[in-house]
Image 1 (cartoon, rainbow, N blue to C red):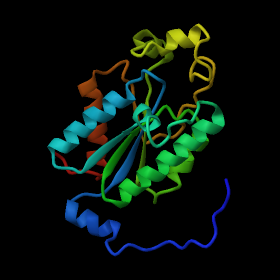
Image 2 (image 1 turned 90 degrees about the vertical axis):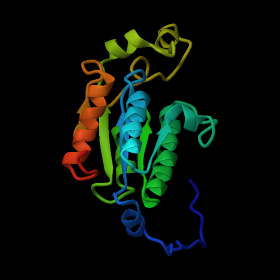
Image 3 (image 1 turned 180 degrees about the horizontal axis):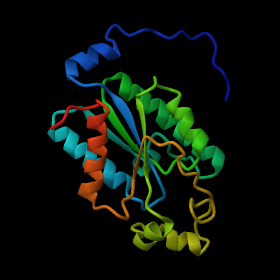
Image 4 (image 1 turned 30 degrees about the vertical axis):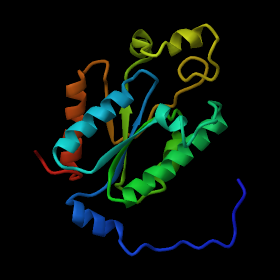
Length: 202
């Protein structure tokens, strides 16, 4: 990527800390990663619903939705996936700076790409949540019919079938949506956020 010269970072008058004080809570990236069909978007939205009900400023950045706009035109090979995650990482960083608890629901199959986003924000502002439903569970759901197409060779570079998925080694939290209900999974995330001081106990 070409490096653009002659630009200087402009410091904002209102800081992230100012926004934290106004909002009454800190901001962070809740990064949901896992196979297609693991329930990342469903879980992220359920957690957001519960956070919103409790008065927190939240937003969900969904993988498919982002590819319809900001990342429209990007493919699914390794380099395109890296750029997809780089862009969404930069957007998520802006949300954190705005004082928002932002959730991202992306397959994001490569450890290096997820670590790239982690490095964008200070320690403690990136929470990796591994949605650890097995391939069998995900393929059994196949809510979008993608696994069937991938098995038939109609979709190339499909994670879990023709492309690898690198599971997190040291995720802040692991949630098995194949073994837990949606509400149980959401409560697992909320309990972690409470215990680590991201949010106050209900």
